[in-house]
Image (cartoon, rainbow, N blue to C red; front, side):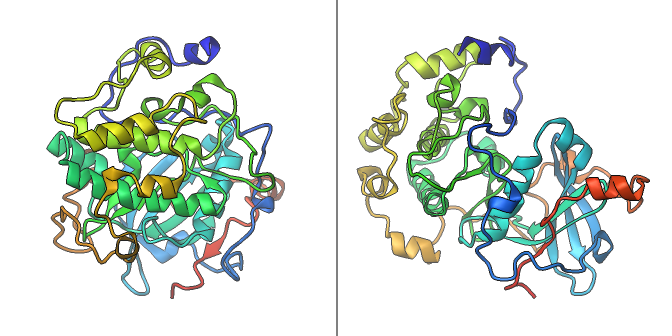
Length: 377
């Protein structure tokens, strides 16, 4: 573990937004776009969708590989979120496989608690993914405003997230980056999981494990830190960390010194706050087990835990249970639930692409990336 810790530095500057660690793709269980099955008929069929079909309105966020924009489709006025990724940065950071996997996963899933991909296309130097715009804001945004949530509110979000994780796991997908920044609230207050850049899809033996060292430090499961191989159990550790943060206002084991935080995760019992209910304490202890073999990591068993007592899982899946909090949203373009640091930035995306010769353009293609949701007109 010592070698893994050194790559972060021992004392990082505290950042209100928690950034993920991104390692190279798994060498033992490599997945390429060609090996992932399309679950929607005709999902990979070529479509003539380009950047010129969209009017760019605002910046919603940015990351290491590019930006997310609010855009309007010119022919029908529909509002979307557009994720623009620079191929140069993807390749420089050895993230080609992860990027292809994200696109394939988003094009193959259909879950009420996961953001929906509508279109995907590319230029010689960039990749674009067009998704439904969810304008209730990040769970991170609302949690920082409230400091912490009531147990009832935390239970509601955790239950919907559990349904999303269970759906992914039944599709052979582990998420690996569960955190408040990757959870959106829609206008009715229901969750939408987003950002599948670190996800992994498996085929073959049930006991297959991944070995990438990736995730967000505050939520990394111990088996990822140890490098012993991991599976879907890491998502249940992260669920425990997220429930803890919603109730306490900060992740468990948190320290500004990352090396100390990682040591805490591996050796220190999780500290239960005085206001936690017995049921909350019990589920946190069950999910935040260092040994994945002892961790509560079966979705059906988690659903029947006393912490989730009273949840009607059928109604929850149908979203007929009213959310405990409804975000303030005035209309489809209302950005009051997004950080002004981004939304006030000048929004533009150049139509001028890098000048590449035919050979370079061919080498810079991401085969199978183009996509149109067959159920979306």
